[in-house]
Length: 98
Image 1: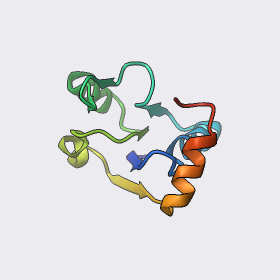
Image 2: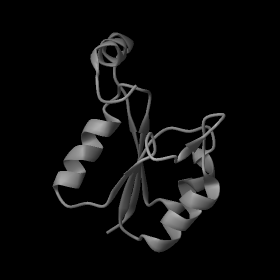
Image 3: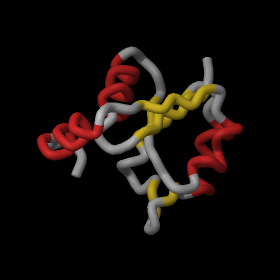
């Protein structure tokens, strides 16, 4: 197994993909929730370090200014993208992530 980071703009599908992977039995962390992101749009670095130190098999989803500090701790970094009109439509109509 491996550590995987799923990143991309809001509306690109990170949360949807993470939910599907969780349904398939993967350990997942959505950094949009539960205090992973601190003021200023950065991840809680001690907390992320702890997660990555204790889990060899985890899928993390999110986008933060300091995420690059952790790239070497992931075996794979997956960037999701979509056309701007699709991103805007998804953000305007979603109800599960303010």
